[in-house]
Length: 146
Image 1 (cartoon, one colour):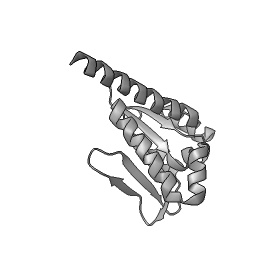
Image 2 (image 1 turned 135 degrees about the horizontal axis):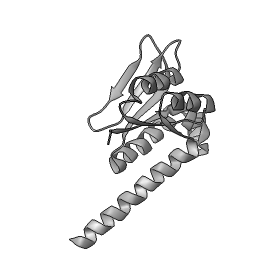
Image 3 (image 1 turned 120 degrees about the vertical axis):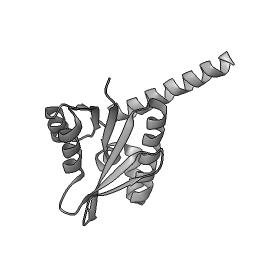
Image 4 (image 1 turned 180 degrees about the vertical axis):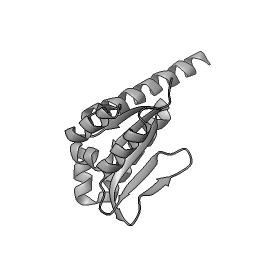
């Protein structure tokens, strides 16, 4: 079985989740931090590698990764997060199992055309909640077996 990746269009999800949209209205960094935290937990719970992509404005595509953390990419000026997501799908969907999380239907169709799976904003929320529940159940079972 190939390694699994979840590629998330950050701003698409932020604007689709009311609680993150509200945070973004107050301070963009707060919404990003909350999404990063939720996706880092998802990666820890599920074992699925997470790549989070935001629109950026620098000269080059930039990446931030902390040891054990998720990969975070910022697009460069003149490119969008969609461009990065689509490029990742085109390059890696044949080799890995990729799911793209975005509320953008056109981006979903493009990702599917490259062989990726897709989920919308609420589907992503359900993935995170299911992984959190599975982790809690596993932890409870392990404690009971001690």
